Image (tube, rainbow, N blue to C red):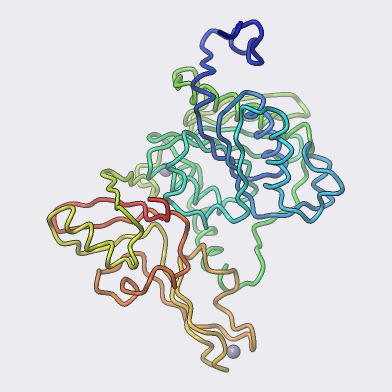
Length: 377
Ligand SMILES: [Zn+2]
Ligand SMILES: [Zn+2]
């Protein structure tokens, strides 16, 4: 028996509601390995959260070094997630860390299911919208944080009540929709901003995010004070406030996945998956519903360059809708729902721009189920 006074976690275990065993067996996904991500991961590792996966596709730039404790000059040009994971691992041998250097969207809408909690340190609304939709559909909590100058906010979104999308105005949503449809016509990501921030703002906000996260991880949502609410911090006046969000009854993100079925292996096509689900349900699948549009991009109509592409919207490369040779727009067709006999449903998944782990809905005349189509399932 280990003397509890000798435990590395002794001081935090003296907090009356603490549950270190549960924290050590928890799995958390951290989205974003920048200023907030560095602080979030540091706090989770010191706390002794058992498994921490970090996803960020960006590489380290000189201007990141003023706010990221795990990055040094020599790391410039390397992937943020990899450097963060390497550095943080040295802080606590009890913790397993992994880095994923792809956009969160490429991991897929079913990916987040394997975690107990998702904590975000993001700098753009597109990724927040995507994450919100995936977590909400799977009935999961996720925690958001944002910083600008000496201001910051932290908020917790749960399986019901207001979600991130509920906090956006009609104009915000219209603007986002427009940017999303333009993304395939522009070669570079316009989401990246150069907002003023500093190290202290990110540590304050990340600290609050992880503090609320720990309460959820130990199974005490009753102690979590920011579910469906936003905590705002203004670092010049030192004023803080908590405001409750209001759920939008018409919010598009509120269609929670009910029944979740499991297939033995990854089927070769969506049609094959539909056939398996039909056998499972004892009824024919009539429609396959995707979490986001599947898009077909034709070869260039002007010069004929570029082979046709089929892929999920967020997996297709930015600018895929524009001919690389002559700049003409390539015709695109988008669908989020297919019949099992549709040509895209009979195209091998291998040749579609697919994700690691995608949540797909299957409908019969009388019921529906969802399946996570992933390599590991
Ligand atoms: Zn909502
Ligand atoms: Zn062309």
